Length: 212
Image 1: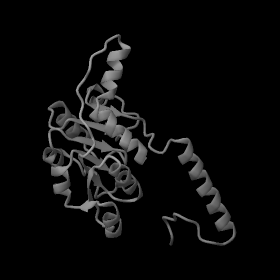
Image 2: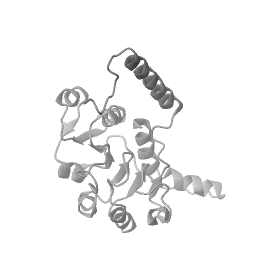
Image 3: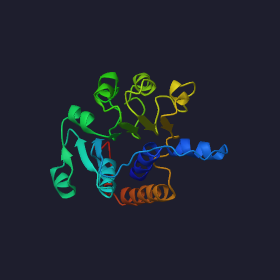
């Protein structure tokens, strides 16, 4: 998932899909892009995936801001990550990436108000869950150039049939592929098998969400 986020950052920043379309149609136009090196990345939700993104972003010498209701100060100190308020993150970040679960509290977390706080040159990335971003508000922000672009691996409706976002050139949409790598699928199978062995041996399995 963290790898995909970095890939989507580069696709947005360098307009790679537009360049690909031009070349495949016989053209050779150069489209001006922007760099992610040295830019400010805002991570909403610094859990396991958010931390993975932060670690990779440091390889691009990015200034990493984060917002989380449960701060991990040890991690922030070790990796040079700065906690800030939700509003400050939106205002300061060149790229905002979302890594929180979909709950009643996070549904519609990014709407018209929040998009209005972002820089007109900023990019928004959502690889967490559809519904966290208000898609109508996002469409309006992208269509009116209130933000520069967005990349979505998740949608409120999947597949997003008839979504107006499909008509925009400044949005990249992938088909919920964040965990779809050979390595990730293999590792998930291994974890599942280990859990079966643990439970059969009357031991507690890992990653339990219903411990009671």
